[in-house]
Amino acid sequence: MNYKDVFVVNKIHYNKSQEDVDLNYQLNNYDYLEPKLVDDFYLKYFVYKILFELDILEIDDFLSFHFEEAQNKKLFTQIIKHKLLQKIDYLVNNAKAYMPEGGSNDEIKLEDGFIETKGKILKPLFEDYLISHKVAWQELKENIIYRKSIIEDFMKGVNQLQTQKEVGEKLVWSGKPSHLAYFISQLIEEGYIEPPRKRNDDINYQKLSNRILNSFDFANDIPSNETLKKYGNVDAEKYITLNERFVNHGFHLPNLKIME
Image 1 (cartoon, rainbow, N blue to C red):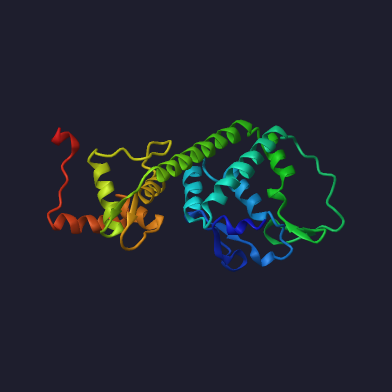
Image 2: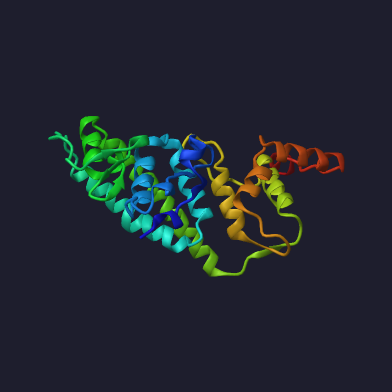
């Protein structure tokens, strides 16, 4: 299976850009190594990134980003459930130090940590034997298990939203999507709505945008998750500019406590 069609992969080949794209949680593009690149490379890359490269507070946003951008959301959730979570269990249960006996005679070292062996190109860092070694050697079992719990919580949230979506019809928003995101954030700021939050209690704008998309149909343009985030985040430039326009036109929402 070619997992690059499920996860969000940068359009520019890594050997051309030579820079990571963590800002938007995209995976680097190594398609220039095809057709020898192992078929499940992007799944292995995804697993390694979520277990070791991401700060633990970024996991929820990372999953939300890939879920919202996925062309096949059902397939994405199936991969998380049946591939990622199962892989984590395997790596934890089989964690042990690896003692190398020397590379294979046909092993060819390539750039960026890749090797070619037996006609296939892979990255040893992403392979099970080295991940299990890392988990055992660095005593990361508890950390990995905790990361698994965050992933499971994310999946519960996705299932709940899907259930809500199937229960009844949505409200239809006739105005600009940017205005809806702005009004929702205004209601949050003034205490009328309790938003989804990260573990550090900051507002989780990725999840907030997801819930807006799952609560409304749009009469005109259907917004992207990123658009809603830009206009719903009170610290974002787009929000600040739009707020000035509404205030200049006399908009004011009193705080909930004033109205009690």
